[in-house]
Length: 200
Image (cartoon, rainbow, N blue to C red; front, side):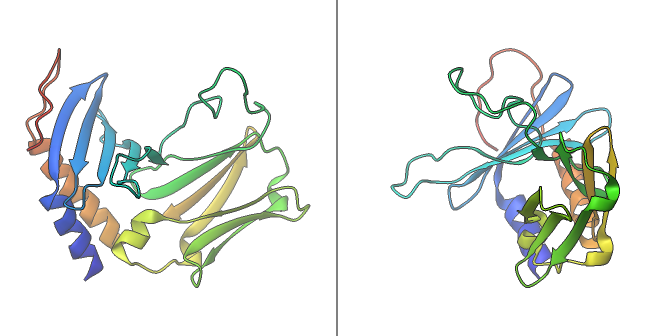
């Protein structure tokens, strides 16, 4: 089963833990050389950030790719060119029971939006009836576990110029996350100062 394979991959990965700024920060190094970094709120155990880095074509370290969390608020790191602050900003911020995406700076009434699951393409699609916004996005957690997309699990709300799309987590993902969190809490993490980042 794919869920068990992914769970085994996580267990086999070399892990380093650090507790800082009210967060549990965990770095994974997988057998194929790829890396994953996660941050959890200490008080709520909610996932705040997940990013990936894979080897480049020539074997060097690639760039970090954000999967969960907020990017640089300006969208770019250069001071010379900045993205307009009024452009729609798409980001993922999960809750304990659902995968959740936010599209900020989008002010149309709720009736204008529709969201659908496209199982054949393994993605979800946000559309507006006025043809002003269109976005395709995947759910990597479901892809890793090879679980099917269900349209019934999708919902959307709109408030304060922000569209919020939720996808209810399948029970397999909830179980896996609980098991993983239990293991992460057992990791010995250092909390202050310069540390030797040896991976366990």
